Amino acid sequence: MTSVTYRVCVVCMGNICRSPMAEMVLRKVLADHGLAARVAVESAGTGGWHIGGPMDERALRILAEHGYDGSEHNARQFTADWFDRYDLVLAMDRDNQAFLRRLAPAGVEVRLFRSFDPDAPAGAEVPDPYYGGDEGFEEVLTLVETAAEGVAEHIADELSR
Image 1: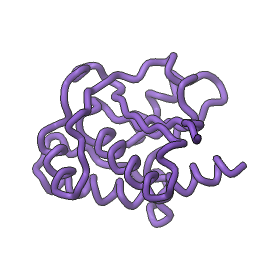
Image 2: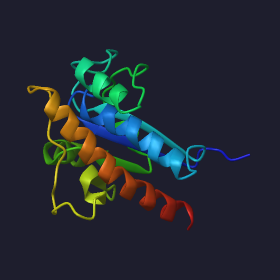
Image 3: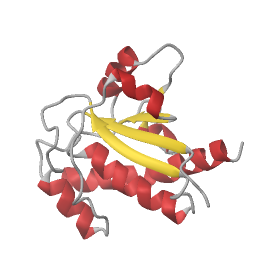
Image 4: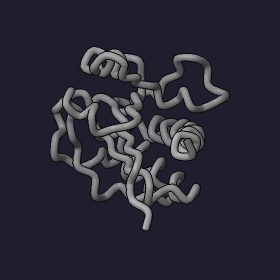
């Protein structure tokens, strides 16, 4: 029986748009790669405004339209003591990455989610769609789906060592 041996946390600002979308996509991509039983994926926000609340209704709807289920999501806030829980912490943008790096113990790496997209420029971010319309959420989904393949390949490499 295979058990979880690798843990990932995806982090954005409030944990209601980008990071839960990335969490749901990454779970599916890892399952498609046969890694679901070995990898746990979670998400959190750097801010605590939405703790315990659901995903943004637009994010939830866009995910559902593309075959993902985010209905069980409850927003959480990432805290410094969480770094021990995860093998990989992924920030959705440079601001959240900088915040997480300030929290992180020495030697802990926090990567940008899009750094796993081979076609993305260095420092590429997943933009925050919160103050816009559905098109922003569609863009987030596209960017996340593209990068998630690279994240899965990275994890597969890590697990094969």
